[in-house]
Each structure stands twice: as C-alpha cells, then as structure tokens.
Image (tube, rainbow, N blue to C red; front, side, top):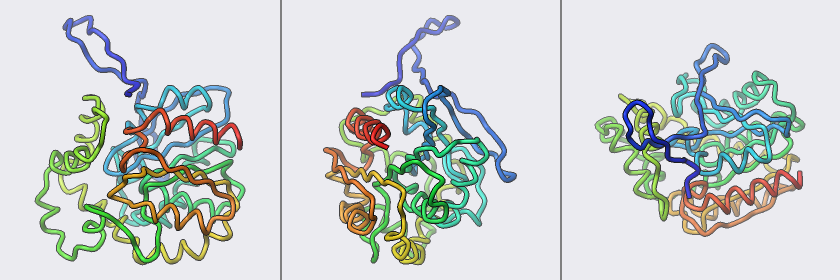
Length: 287
C-alpha cells in the first residue's frame, strides 16, 4: 500500500496526490544530484534509486523507514533526475561515487539500501571502503557470473543493435517497467516523476551501466569473499527480470549475509512494501 496521502488543493478544490518525499538538488563532484531527506537523531541511512525509476521508488516505504533512521535518498548520477556523466556508468565507478555521496552528506557510517542497479555498485563500494557502512541492503540486481538475467534486462545488456531503444519515448520506457509491477497501483505523482526522468535519449545513455555487467561482474565476484560489511539480500520470489539465482549467488559467497525471499515480482520495494520495510528496519535494528 502506498504511503502517498490525498489532500485537497486550497486553490483548485481538486483532490491531489502528495508525497512525504520532497526532492532537492545538490552539487557533488560538479554534478547536479537530486536527493530527498528525512532528518532525525537516528542512525543515518542512504537510499539509492533503482532503474528505471527514481528516489520516489521509496514512496511506499518512506514513513516506515524514517521511523528508524535519518534518511537521505539519492538519484544516482545519470539516473532519475540526477546529472549524467559517462565515466560513472559502470558498477565499479558508481561504487566510488556512493562513497563520495556519503562523505558529501556527512553521513556517519550509514546503512545503505541499494536495490536493482545499486546491488553491484554498493558491493564495489563496500569492498573498497570496508569500514564506511554500517550495513548494506541489496537485491533484485544483476550479480551472477555468467549473467543470469530475464526479460527485458537480458536484452538491454546483450543486444548489439541499440537503434530500437533510441526510438523509444519516455512513456514507452516507463510503461514497460511499470506494467511489470504486480499488485501495486503506482501513485500518479510517482509515475509522473518516473516519466519526467526519461526525456530524449537518456534511457539509451543509461544502458551503458548494465551493459558493463559482463565485464564488471567477474571482477566483483573476486571481491565478494572479502566483503565484511553485513549484507541483507532481498529479492522477489517471482522476479522475472533478475531471477533468484543472482541473490543466491551472492549469499553463497558473501561471508556476512542474510537472504530473504519475498512474495513479489521484481519491484519488491513497491509490490510488497510492508514486508520490504519490515525486513529492512529489523536488519537495521540488528546492526
């Protein structure tokens, strides 16, 4: 169930959808980075945007997560509404930038939540900075070697001809993803934010990130046994985009990990928000 409430506009009298998430922008390493925060005296948590969504992917869990942590949600560079820079469009380089984000916001040993594309990047970050994060929550992201991906992610990674993707408009891109969401009605304010993030050829430019998987995931595999940061793995049981073998692969190789398989498809943070928030917050309390 969405955390987005209904309000009545004083000027129009119409019912409008509102969200607890209030985005702002900050310059980090010369890039305009969009973020939202819920500040408290609780431990810090850094939430990273999945693809092809944005930081509004946490709309359904925001209030519950904010009860347990001081939140900073970020659109990773090149995704959501943050500025793109080509040299960051790989998991290893994005991992370096995640550490930079935590430093720029002055986050003291934060928990990190990085589903989807954040999975590999957050693991690279944890490998490079072993004592920087209190814990990591990931899943629903490509990680197995060789790649084990479902539709449409397999095609996005391996198709040689990108011309059909350049022909797609933002509605086509978002609708392909959103039509895969099971049992959850996306609030209009969230859908509109997703749509606004994919103007022009932005989606094709972003594809470079996942197309780096065949080269980068083997390098990540070598690092997994040495990652000491506690890792919570969450994946939808019926995920047809990133099948379960990906988190099982990680769980077998990470020395300090826990795996929870949730009754959901790929977008587990929205499709089963209650269970997702419960697992994340209980993990935070234990770490």
